Structures are given as C-alpha cells and as structure tokens.
Length: 84
Image 1 (cartoon, rainbow, N blue to C red):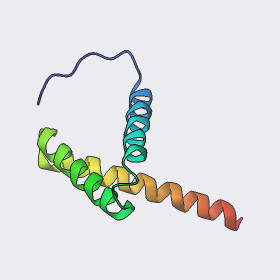
Image 2: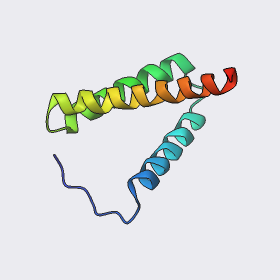
Image 3: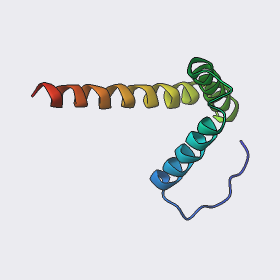
Image 4: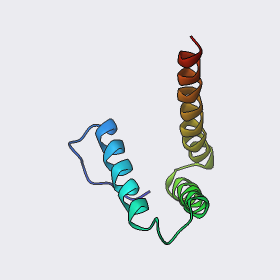
C-alpha cells in the first residue's frame, strides 16, 4: 500500500473534502454522462480502488459494505422520523 502524506484534517474533514471534489467532477460532466452511467462508473471505481489499495480483500469488502449499510441506516432513520 502506498504511503500517504500526513494531513492535518480530521477523517471527517477529509471525507467531506473528497465528497465535494467528486461532486464537482460529476457536475462538470453531467451533460456528457447519464446518471446511470455515472453511478456505474463511480461504483466500479470505488470497488477497484478499495480492492487495489486495501491490504486484504476482506477489508476492501468491509469498507464497501459499511458505506452501503451506513447509507441504508440513514435512510431508515429518516423514514421513521417522517412516520412518527
């Protein structure tokens, strides 16, 4: 795994920064790529990145599935708040 540069930002700050940058790229190319193709490309990219950089395939799988389950949990909470 390649060494990473020390960063003074917290993990949350780094994640938010990366998300904003990726969102900006998506906005830049939105007229050239359909939403479905963008999602497929990003999903494939994330899987490739996770499996190419994680020290073990189990860790890559854990990272991907954790992000999916966190998103599903957030949606579940929001749905229950609307019902209450």
